[in-house]
Image (cartoon, rainbow, N blue to C red; front, side, top):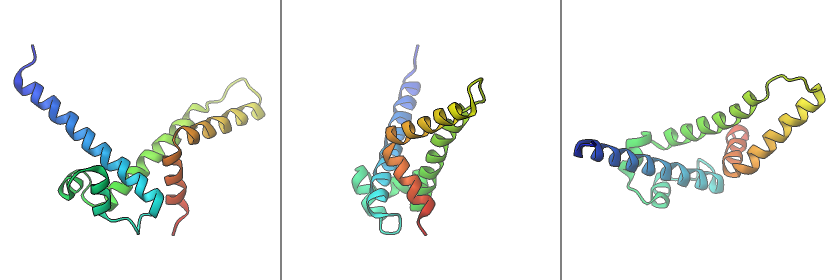
Length: 123
């Protein structure tokens, strides 16, 4: 039977995950719209509906949230690459399948793909 401490711990973990995800989503949206340099911590926390200390608690600073978004983008596209295992298909068909998986991943995750492109090619 769950104890009150376990219930409180589960609730706290859920709230923490929600706050963290809201910060990431807000930062992703604003970074895509304005770029990293033009985005302030104040804008991110306002869009996420949290306070500055919350951002500093989860990510240390604006760069920390940026690096987490980069890590997630990399992880997303690594999954697509790892799915492309050699098969009995011709090389041409394997390349087609790989390209389709990349395309589908970009369509399903437009904001992340936009962020990854900007993070890769902006000075």
